[in-house]
Amino acid sequence: MHPQFLIYGANGYTGELTARLAVERGMAPILAGRNAAEITALGTELGLETRIAGLDDPAALDAMLSGVAVVLHCAGPFVHTSKPMVDACLRAGVHYLDITGEIAVFEALAARYDEARRAGVMLLPGAGFDVVPSDCLAAHLARRLPSATRLKLGIRALSKISRGTAMTGIEALVQGDSGLVRKQGVLTPVPVAWKERAIDFGNGPRTAICMPWGDVATAYHSTGIPDIEVYMTFPPAMVNVLKAGRYLGWLFKLPGVAGFARSRIRAGAPGPTPEERAQGRSYLWGRVEDDAGNSAEVRLQTPEGYTLTAEASLLIVEKVLAGQATPGYQTPSSAFGADLVMELPGVTRSD
Image: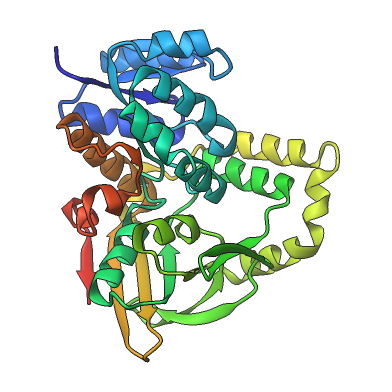
């Protein structure tokens, strides 16, 4: 019997996109989640086995993981959903992947390195656009300048966001999350959008603002570089909203405010259309510096983010199923090297 993999949250936007791509590639994932009607309907359409379990039911999760070699967890916000799935994977000896970009999740799983290693389980969060291309870019920069002490990354993603991504953003506001950078190896809170810089992604300078992207956590584990900042481009109106969030975040703690925002998100489109994804591109930039004044700079172009997430997560699944899993907490580049992203279609890198 061939090792099996399971997609949890297969009825979500990214989970379904990944399941359909897997079938196109001749793979046969088990589709799982807590919504029996939606999971069953998708499984029937794609001709795939389905399993139903809620994350609040450890016994059901244990049964769901029977015979499974690796889980691709696609049901966020992962700050709420990752721990019960990781717990189940450690009990069952199943490798864990997810598509989070949430710093708290990366750090929580990194803290379980020894536990996972003893269980023979690889914990690799961030197997999608968060953070495969940026993590590989960081590792490549560190390879070019091993003495680097400062890392700056920039991301320009031309795509709409999915409901799941938007919901994660709402959770961050509810939790009162601030901006984060890495200073001398320590995660350090800063105001949201506290810095701006002009970044040339290869098509002229764009204004980008400092944001708490997942690499503030993962790039440190991948490279050991102690000072890390991540910048992203946004439309000017969105920049103003983010800056206002420094002072208005308390609104989302009021009864009903976050609920209203969630309801508006649920009423919207689930994510970008296939046409929008096909036309979209993502651009990444990175720079490292050392204390002697040396530096290196690299640019990366990739397909649209959700497309890349499906492609990257399945590539990693294939590697794990082939026996290429290192127990313990891993980042994409620590597990598979800085050139992992170059194995994906439509990716170019410019040193």
